[in-house]
Image (cartoon, rainbow over all chains, first blue to last red):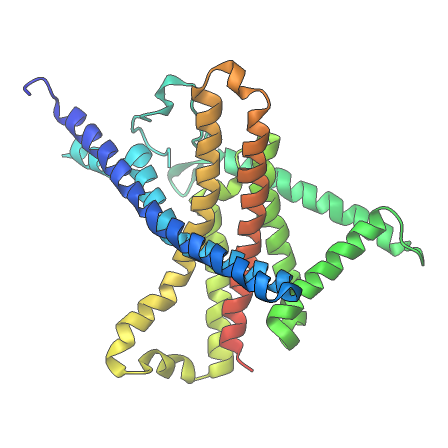
Length: 91
Length: 241
């Protein structure tokens, strides 16, 4: 354990944290799946309103995606912006 | 991202590269700022839109009774835009159709510029946040213009102690909108850079076409649609009836 430098430890933990942040992708996946399923059911019940249903579904899915994208932004910041490392180097 | 002197963990080998590059440094109010790749790509996109607009204008000035060629395309685009804005904003569509059309075209062309080898300007948080700030100003302007004092008292509805949550909700709108656009385009850019940078040469024949179709064309068009749609929904929500 003595060979690990402080910077190396910070980098390793940041990368693990980036991986953990992407667990946020589960929620939007489930949500978008439910929206797509309901959209398919709605088209089956009322094929005439297909255009409206598809556009409403895509809008809802894009909004539901936001929480997953927050996770992605956190992961990208941890990997490429790395606030922890810059704070450590400033100390 | 990519600013400062931090080590770029993945990009350090020079193969995987999706960061914003600094091209020309110049002095602005005592600090060194840069003309970046985002500015250059945005300039190219604006030039494309302007040149197309000039050609379309010239064509429409000498319009025929029976449209052919480019006139067909322009009329179709304008009719689609009118239907798109009119179905969401109703009678207020006339005031906002120009802005929504500009916004949609700019975001769409920015998103699909990854297809032409540029780095999309919307993968820079500065661009998307500026667009979201414009939307935020439009929302609040219409809120105060149409609801007068109700814009303030509305924050205390339905219960007075919910005021902080309502206030945060107002200011969360531009942040969530900008992060949604940024995250989508950035994820596409990162995926394409990883694919082109890390995999062996024989995988790069043919397969990137499918990825470009999804990440640049499909995702880009959806996000441009969503961004302008959300702008219209929020603004017409504040205008009321």
